[in-house]
Image 1: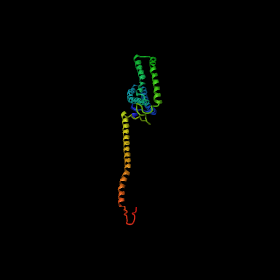
Image 2: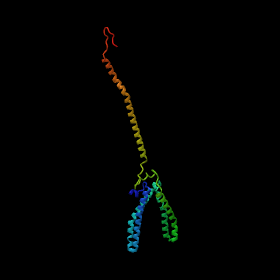
Image 3: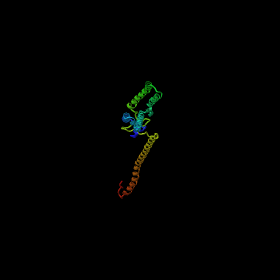
Image 4: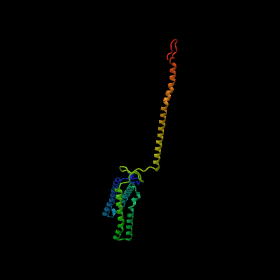
Amino acid sequence: MLSLLFSFNGRISRGTYWLCSSGVNLVCWFAVFAVAGAEASSAKHGLGALAALPDRLAIASPLLLATTWSLFSLKVKRFHDRGQSGWWSLLPLAPVAFMMMNLLTAVAEDWSAERLLASLALPALALAVIAIGFFVNLCCLPGTAGVNAYGDPPGPGLSTSKPRPAPGAADAATSHGVFQSAEKAMERAIAEAAARAQETQAPQRLQTRAAPMTQAALARAPVATPRFGRRPAR
């Protein structure tokens, strides 16, 4: 969960982005409303209660920073799933910085309200266009199929994808498998050749064993001798 909410590595799907960003936004708005409610109650109870406002801001600021970091990390991982660089998540900071500069300039130079609103119109429009583009790109469009430059596709559930193996690891595993297959093929060929050699040598061994036995049988067989007055039997 910590890697999902605070890490900038890996990829997340649309469903994970919807669920996590909604939860983080709820926590962020809860912190903002808590600080705003504390400020309103302090204004009602006078200057004595306003002294507690910095303490409330100090308590809420770590939560606001954590939620902001988490939202950026979710956007980065979703951009990765789209096959795009995570630096695009910093694009809304450009119009926001421009608006802050206009506000500071307006306070320093004592601008009128009309001039201030006119200076904020263009960056506000740019911010709205960026927000719409982010919504379509991150919330509506699917991620790239298969492995991209930022890792494997995200699996089911609230888990980010695992990092890709080193470039030489897959080649080494493939070559090792090829060598194993070749070695097994050679062993199988040697075994078949030995079996064929045994099959060809077996009849020759039987013939060499049968030859002495035949000669011994012929030696033991009775020899017909000729008798007087009779012809020898053939």
